Image 1 (cartoon, helix red, strand yellow):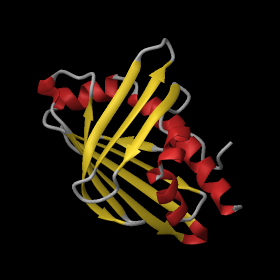
Image 2 (tube, one colour):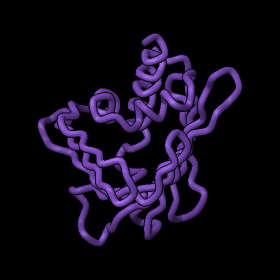
Image 3 (cartoon, one colour):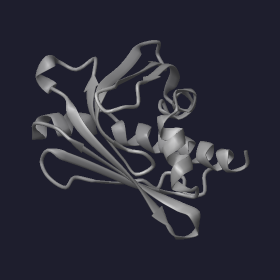
Length: 165
């Protein structure tokens, strides 16, 4: 069990933004590595809600990513996007599209910052910006927070495991 299980804090800074912030008991470079490595993403991205079978990443500005999981109940959940800004171990900015959403939902812009804290800890801040309050609220109502909490717990476990390697 991670040292900081289920501790991500979700806030709504504006009608079109969702912010999740969580601290990890692992160094920033290992959290970033676990966050951006396909084999490791397959372990944490789906939380406890399914099996991630696709984690493709072309980690460069203009590169794309796509994650697909088979959720409990047998249906597929897929997201994809494009990287807009990358500062290794510090910042990722990418678009995000839920492939099951209607086209009018558009794409989100997600900014992740990885911050060093004392004691070899890391703070990850994930800001999701969308086009409307309706889209923001639909994301919140989808159960996104629970799934994110589960996934981030697993992400921390992986980053801690990487310290021992």
